[in-house]
Image (cartoon, rainbow, N blue to C red; front, top):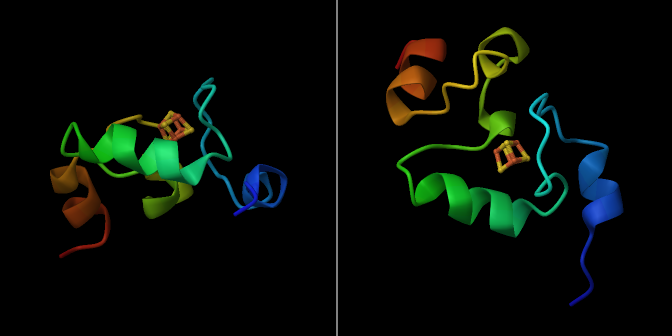
Length: 63
Ligand code: SF4
């Protein structure tokens, strides 16, 4: 299967300087290993805090 990095980048809202941008499989693995979620799971104003914890996700979406 071909990597879709270029098309993934069009949907990436991450504002952190990171080499995993567009490589969603690596991005997700990286954050899940730390009990976190990727930038694209958060509203823009929350994403900028770089707090990608499950708690922040739940708070951001009033879960
Ligand atoms: S969400 Fe995390 S791993 Fe993914 S591109 Fe942004 S900083 Fe990198």
